[in-house]
Length: 143
Image 1 (cartoon, rainbow, N blue to C red):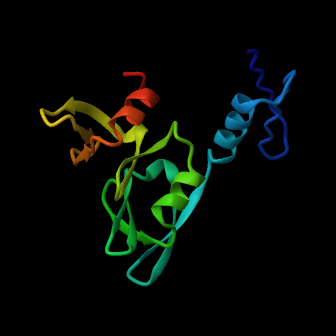
Image 2 (tube, rainbow, N blue to C red):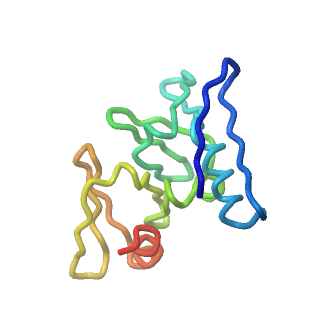
Image 3 (cartoon, rainbow, N blue to C red):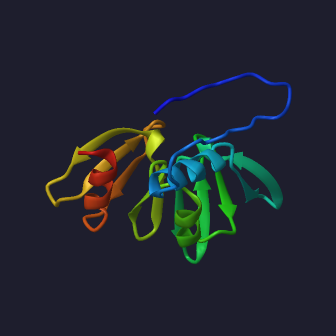
């Protein structure tokens, strides 16, 4: 793979040159498109734009979806299955029926006796990766 970066006066432009458009190239395209993605979230009747890089995790509770950042909690319109389609599995992964976590925000992983994994996030909060989702998380993280 050859990567070239050049400066130009216009907006940021990414050009992918390849011999064949395959699944890896399409995944790279999707990853680049999501690079600067912002989510519309609501807090106290006020709409906010939250960069996806600030999200620690998403959680579904009582038919409502919440977005957690380092210091705040927001409500968003999307459902977890929609968020799974939007975000790359290299950045966000489902860890339970009700949670999706930002892999870049996990600081430690600790296997538990009941075959779950305890994930500690960068803010010290702990989330449990359920047994059903442990194999997919292990595969993504190459554990």
